[in-house]
Image (cartoon, rainbow, N blue to C red; front, side, top):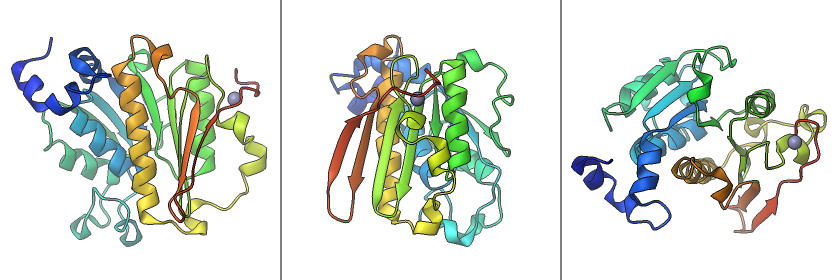
Length: 246
Ligand SMILES: [Zn+2]
């Protein structure tokens, strides 16, 4: 049951017919891993904290650099050279003191989370192919939903993967074909495409968490959304299910 304070705090979200009080309770009782506290992580984590996600495990082994500030909205000039994960925890704990934020100044390996069975969702906010494909295999092996996100110059892409039911990024783009492709940083990054990708990821995340008692009801399961901010073109395709992870 939601408290009166929770009903007040989350009233805008509860008023959405697909969420209601039952969906908000599910969101509050959720535990999520976010891999990366940079461009995607800044906006994703702020959305999840605002929406009341009860427990967050956030990973980033980097420190804040000057070239991060245009896109990584958690940080400012006083944070330079400080730990991204610790600064994220420090700042976002001020938004809602009821939310448990566990910050890890290390890479996510899978072994650094003890109670993996309590995790409802993993969100990929990394900026490299190795981590993205590691998370894809890891969530397949451990039967955990995964939100994928990527940016290529002006184009924002996000997808919700649940290997038992849907295809995955390895089905769409086999790792061997992309491992040597230029990174988002090499291609250049349009700042609004980062926050657009992260907002799409946060929306998919809240949809899954609100319906975590029946994930098959999630409308956007297995879809890949893309929007090109240079011309407004959008696309929505269904992930093929063809790789050996399924
Ligand atoms: Zn696959």
